[in-house]
Length: 473
Image (cartoon, rainbow, N blue to C red; front, side, top):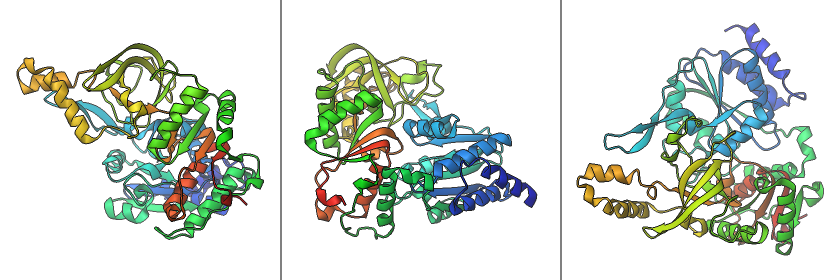
């Protein structure tokens, strides 16, 4: 390793910052240069940073530097929305992890699933944003590691905010946990954390207040009850206390200002999300039927069936968390005890998405549950299989079931109001953050992380709905 080469890369990186790097960013610059030239196997760099610490600016500088020195890079994120955000701030295309590392496969009985793809990249740097969303209750983190390091001399950067909500079923974010990665994978790994707020970011009262909440998170032990955080409404005009009486007028104004895709209500439960979605569709969008042209729907279960026929889309996965917009309704029908609609949709976060003809299950749209249970999915299989009993053999019946439009129907919820976990990874110009029912016993460190994650979904305007006056200075 040449110290001159390392120094040259560091200088190149500094040149891509729009301002003098903070002390934390200086440490990242030096750490990245060492990481880039390291001869050790399976090099991994964790980059953690709170909101306002210049994390995205730093990653953008790294991406532009890699482009200048003609080093291949691959930009990834857990969801389509997060990939779209990454594309915007980096200036280069980003993709979901699933679309990069998996390829479809067909088993001997005809069922379609996925397998880890072959990594044909050489000397590539894989940069994964919003890595705090990657849990260890599925195989995604393991598969990501296997895919990246199966490529010749490939390296991995995991980027995220450790103060955000951890993945469902986890107490921490394993992809940002240095000790966990060391003990679970045979890799060379280092970690850098940005904590100093960039001076230019202090113009945002959203980030000023998010920084205050993050400080409380750092000072609170897991499981501990916290005192009421004080939100400073006087720090700027972009954080507003909103009463329920003014909600409809505010939503109408924000929809007019930013469009339907520019504002979302973030809440704490699926039940409240259903209520908000019903009110927004009925009172703001004047939608009367269960599903209408223009409806924005969030996918809540991975689907590998409907994209097979579309060469314009690079893979066959419509992923959990993807948002689709209905552009045509062909038919509505009831079968197996559920409601369905045959529709044409576009993938909102896919540039130049083709019109996709598919079937959606509309029953879940107004259901308080996030998705069907495992037992309900098994029962669905049995009901569909009974319709093909005349085919005789189990293999023929199974092959027919997995081609059935109802069995393969896209499971969706309305996307106008989301739980914080569903909103994570995305950003919108305007957020309405719903406090919901809250008592002092519920105000612990994990609730602070929920509050912090909700704050940091907003880019321009944040409205705090029905927050108790004791929250405000």
